[in-house]
Length: 308
Image 1: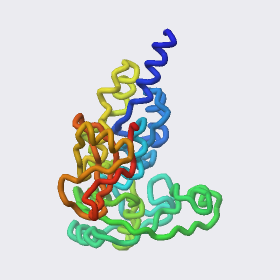
Image 2: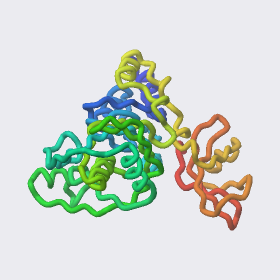
Image 3: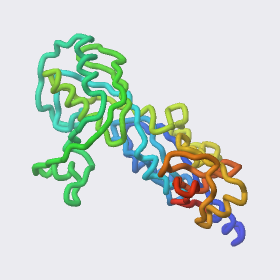
Image 4: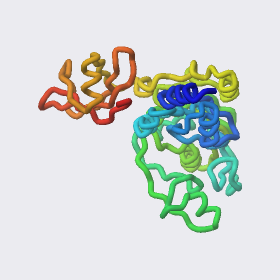
């Protein structure tokens, strides 16, 4: 390869930006998957938008290239899970990785379980499991717990939009959970078991949606690794603008694209809510910037500009 070819290829790689939606397999950490993406794409700037435990599978959104700057916005998106809960047993970790801490008989009807689930719909405070990656004084909670030290985690405000009982085959239930970012399904399982008086633990978890991306958008890691070897992985790259597909959208003219990229305001085509954030895209659908509406001037102010 000549120096020119090398430079051309390097420039091409550095300009690649977008989203890979991966169906993470059980047994891998989210970080392991990101590392596979970095190796396969040869792009160092890559990161996921919401950790999945190694024992969980499903939708893992990985941002590649300049699109990683969207992480703080995509990671706060709602999530959806299909979870398998086993009643009559509790563990130290609230899942099957921990030591069993209690056992109890299970005598719950379908109707009683549905009624209990309904009480966990809405906004409420949830205490994360002590075996989690939350940091306490610079240390991860699970490291503190494994060292035999006491861990106290503050409750967090979460929202459960819906809880649906999909199957009840005592002592196990399958539920569909639509919730806000930051919700721990393990804690939900534990709290539900406490409410029903018999205990419960999480035995299986699959994320079916992260923000606007679902399993239908996802590619298996094996298939993606094959695409890396074939050199055609680009066909699975989703444009960065689609990561915020549910945001208010302003399509810019060629002249406005140039103005926004230089940090200048542009006139708003219509009046919207004061302080609303939106995505500014080019006529080709490229994400240009994240913008904020100024009601006093009826203009859009660039807040985060891409590809200057």
